[in-house]
Length: 65
Image (cartoon, rainbow, N blue to C red; front, side, top):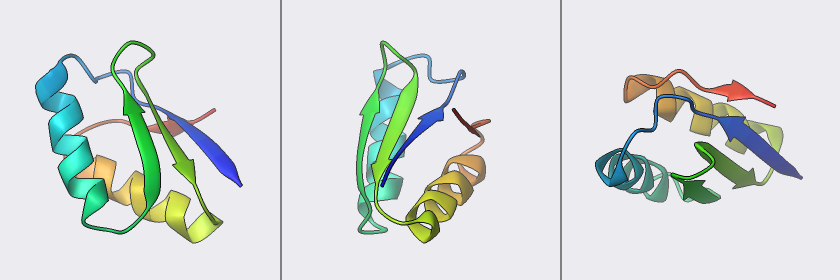
């Protein structure tokens, strides 16, 4: 399943790098887009929850569309 997470507080490439580093370590299949301020997760509901937790731990305010 593909989940789209809105992350309105992605403001720059540094934000994208921080997200990429954190989510890569989890083994989740994802993509992070600065222009749309979204993170797309391809996986199960557990992967989605893991991604949301990681984003919150980084200080972002994610929400699932």
